[in-house]
Image 1: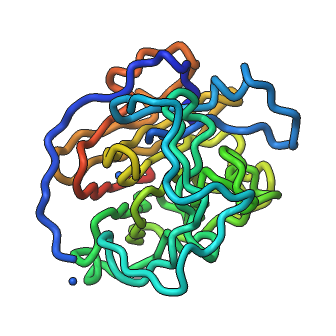
Image 2 (image 1 turned 60 degrees about the vertical axis):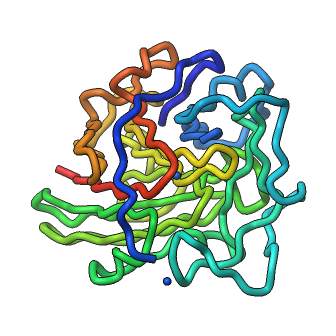
Length: 277
């Protein structure tokens, strides 16, 4: 997962299609947490952020009222990103000066900002990712919100703390996933087919932010920063532009040049394709 310095430049500017048929971070993908829970210093947190979109001036933008944990902001919810999502979690905050402390939408209940959908439903949604397994073996995908169930930034990747979504793809099989506005997520192939702690360790990670609430921007990348000895070939492409990142241009160190690694997408739909090979 991509760990970056706060001063890191943030995006490329591909064109984006605005055609979709419904009725994309300030905190962009952040770095892998260690498998064990540990104290997190300010310096450590500053290495746990990406930014796909232009900086927004100001110390922070409250996007719904701060709370200690995500919770339902309303009893009913209609999203312009598509039907069927849970209510947006309250407490969403974009901190422009400290994006690693931003809190994105995780849905209420938790994970209801993500839906597994059929290919026929794809046109109803603004933000999607089609996962395809081109290997000769079944592959279990672990997909998680960056924000944990208790509302902590970057806590969601600790699978012993927060519940991810998982689904298994047989060889040649695909699965489409839709995302609500202001979602910041990551995914990898589980080493043992489970969501146990450590099942993501050493794997290539994909990361994406969909429709950041403060800026409207979306973005994606691949990462292999920690630990060493990564496994898994992965490509992520934007359907509108063809812009592709793979394990070959994944983040390897926090000081890597973001050019060719982070892909920023201006406000509007973002439809991705992730291929496991």
